[in-house]
Length: 322
Image 1: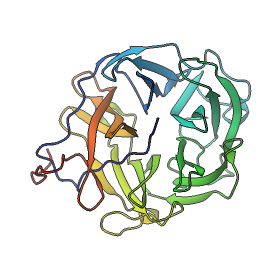
Image 2 (image 1 turned 90 degrees about the vertical axis):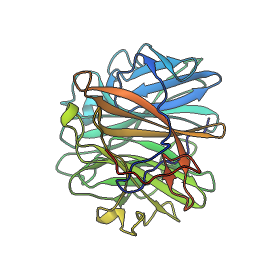
Image 3 (image 1 turned 180 degrees about the vertical axis):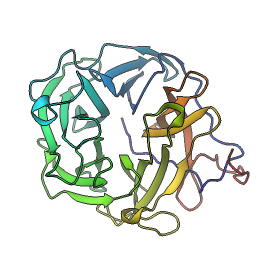
């Protein structure tokens, strides 16, 4: 069960021979999707009441399952006292060290009174989840960063790290203790942007660490201005730069995907590798369905310069984007 994949799109250029969107059916309402495949079954965890869960036998036809949480955990409101009832955000579900780990966040909307929590199990099929408690929190008026949008990654040596952050002081990175899967080092900022940056994915390949983020504003239906951008670094701790060499600490980022006529505000992305294939899952707001957030999944490839791309090798990418 690997998650380390890479995606991209040349700055605001469209693609001839663009990677195909998967023909999804069933329960597709989703926000901030996290995909994982266990055996022959696919799972998708998303933001929502109790942390919503979908399953699929083929990655195409999705069925809504029971949420991960049926009731709030007692410690949540210690860190986010004014959170909405049972409102769990931006899960990240991955395998590491023989267990499945689910990082998630609870928060007060628009404030950084937030916490990242952790739940784990031996397998998704077994469903023997245990509460691993608080990972990290932030306090409004005291901490610069916002403890939401967690993403588990590993470096070239296989050591675990956690990327997280939303707006406020941008994207953060901290090393994890593999015995506890909780912070074991200093927190450092690796990306900032004045007009909004969140939802980090941090993955390693081809000798680089690639940081994918959602920028601008989400959660406004067809008026959402969300976009997906990326940068890369030779070291996991940075500095991360885009194709033009602009630091992500100074607002840089190569645009990966922007909204089109129907699908508005793509973001909350998740990158995933299954076998030899790469894909990207994300939510977009459907202009043909009253702006509701919908799960989308597409194939992804690498270009000759080792940047992620939607363009299949050997095909053109020169037409202007719609």
